[in-house]
Length: 334
Length: 110
Image 1 (cartoon, helix red, strand yellow):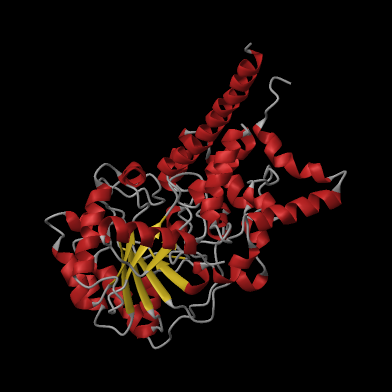
Image 2: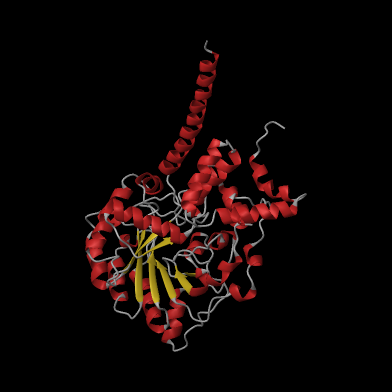
């Protein structure tokens, strides 16, 4: 069996089994209490990465307003979430982001922000690195590869050098050194293939970044590219979309089901609509109950908080989270 | 048949076990063990496999181990160097057999 996997041998997935049929009853619903409130503050981004499922870019105008952010904070106050996970786009491009992250850090929750690094290399947003350090924000930073050519190919010319400068600066501010300022990196494949062993990739990243740039970090998250948005379009243009989908299906690992991120989080879109995850946002597949963050907030303010436990909405793209070693916003799950 | 090599045949590899399941299972177990982390890392083994694949000119293996190497974060530069190693040994093997030629020439000399 191992050799079959090593040689990439698999039966052709000519008929894709609906993902939900792969999921046992227990894993079709979330856990009783959810740890993570993930908030996508908008699709605007300074980059146009080839793998972006959101299709974020400078031309995107969807941005979460302060009223919706306040509702997210109210929900953090009223429910028992442990972590606020802020994502985008580039979250820093939301004009209310700085207010939001500052207010969030007044709560007794872990606040993490997903950062493309390059944005902190611009004069308008450079001050945010110091703000993160002052507030103790956990930084989850995209660095698709430790080699310039690979990163620039995926994210645009010059992105690797800018990322390295910012990582060195974050280290200088105390990040990634075990002092409480956590710096985690995100690897994602540069094409239609799965991430290898997260532990081995982390070891290689550590060795290369330390030797080449004197950069340290805490953990590496290996994330599988989801065939949605710009990544799907790029695969389709090369005639590889179906092959990649087949690869995800044939690499299905049932051992990853209990730890699917959707089972432990609520994901909020820029307009306050709730989803099971950021991929479902890209797929325009909201939670089946149709709730918004305002519903959760209003119910709590009426002293009748809603049950966070819910049925999960699945579709074919969910195979990406359950292929091989599994994948989530926190890396491998299997 | 337009070509002896068909990419879809890689997916039929396991049919080689149909008439000889014991041999197939034994090979699979061995194969799996070989590629586990050992004194050499799985990463290093993937590069060796790629180099050997190029040396034996197996298109299926080149396909598999280029993909496998990419999954492990191995760079194109590293893969290129590995194949140059294979090429150096292949070329060297031809050259060193030239000594046999020289031996025969010397032997033929009167």
